[in-house]
Structures are given as C-alpha cells and as structure tokens.
Length: 324
Image (cartoon, rainbow, N blue to C red):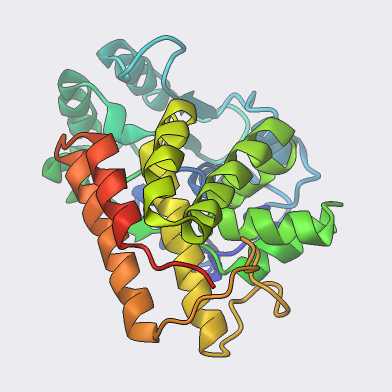
C-alpha cells in the first residue's frame, strides 16, 4: 500500500513500470515544498525493495519495515545536513561507495537524494558519473523543488515527474479522516495550496494555524477599512509578518476562492463557504476580482525585485476594493 496521498497518475505509472521491470535507473520528483515528493520517493523505494508484493509495498515484510524506519541495508538516504545550506560532495562520495556494493537483503539497492537542487556544484558533477554509468541493480530517486534549479546534465539522465498541488477536497478529506475538525480541515486545505505535507504539519501546530489565520484576517480588515486606515493596518502587518511571500499566497488564494464562490462554482472543499473565510460583502465584477489577483502578483514581483515591501503593500492596499 502506497502512503502517498494523491498523485495517482504517477503512482499508477510507477506500479506498472515496476511490474514490467521497465523503471528507469534514475527518477526525479519535482514540485513545491511539502507537496508529497519525499513520501512518494520513500514509497517507491519500499516498492522496489519489497519482496512480498509484485509492485509493493506491502508494508508488512522486513524490507518495507526497514524502509519505513529508514534503516534498510540496501537503502541509502542523502539529505541536507543540519546547519548546512548545500549537500556536500562527501555525501555523494558515500553514496557512490554504497551503490558499488552488492545488495544485502533485497534484489537491488535504492538511493534517495532529497532536495537534490541543493547539491554543491562539485557534488552534482560527481553524481553525474554515477548517472552516466549506473551500476547494475541500482535505482536512484531524487527530489527537487524545481527542475530549473537542477543542472541540465543531471536532468537529461533522469525520468522527471512534476508533482503539482492536490485538490482542496482531497486535502480536506484526508485531514478529516485523521481527526481534524471539519472547519479546521477546510481552512488548512485552502491555506495549504494543495501541499498535503504542509497541511498535516499545520494540523499539529496551533501556532502556525494562528499565524496563517492572522494573515487572512489582515486582508479582511483591509477590505473593511477606509483608505486612510489602510496605511496604519499595513504598518501593523509588516511588524508581525516575517514571510511576505506567504502573505501574497494566502491573499491570492482568498481572491481565487471569492471568484469561484461568486460564479457559483464549488471550490473543491466546503461548498457552503470557502475554507479561508468569506464573510465579506463585495460588490465587484469578476473582472475586477481578476484585476486584484493580478495586482497581488505584481506586488509579489516588486518585492522579489527588491522593491521596498512597505511600498509594495501600501500600493496594493490602496487598490483593493472596499467592503460594503
């Protein structure tokens, strides 16, 4: 049983490829942080090492339990070391030593490199040698937040699967099945932007949930305020916000949900109200709402281009519509 939630198309392909012994020697899962790349990578590792189920994992055999504990003798895991910003060449050298050995318990060896986009240039170059001449009975699985951050030489030797955000309904349902209250699950599903890993982590972190809700409340307060009061709200907001990009994410998602609700289109989660809260009356057209989303994206690009965040947010706030 695969533990990955969603990404069924990728899972089905991997299962068929394993059953037909047609899986490539190097697989790359690329997608946003916490979207499920690591879970899928370890699922694939367990499926390859499982000796009880043809396209596994069974989760019950010695092989599967070893992968779950990340202590399997034929599994080599490479990840960013605490306190470092990149994966060292020495870590890749250790991986190369491991793949040169014969499998100990399973029929092959599996190596997993998490956040491969953080490989040092020297480490990438060394890894390339392994990809060019892969040892027999070895599979290499990599994850990265974006293919654009990976050297083309590595990409060209991997089978690349891009993972995108999951539907809200799927995230909300999974949270509710894990015991999260319906209203909380609806909010977290919306705030997650389809990242199941983030939603699960946030469901166990009340402080994170409160910080996210405060960013949404700031938008609603701004909509309800007159233009003079909005500058003061932005001042308070910047005093409390450490991640302006995340604020733009949530504000943009709120307006997307507003658009869907205005059009009478279910947003994939709670049909009675969208998860981020929609208790604001706005008399604007869909075209005006789309224009607001574009302004949010524009403000985000300004900040990324090193424009002063206060100036970008104040300009944005002045162009937001006023609630009734």
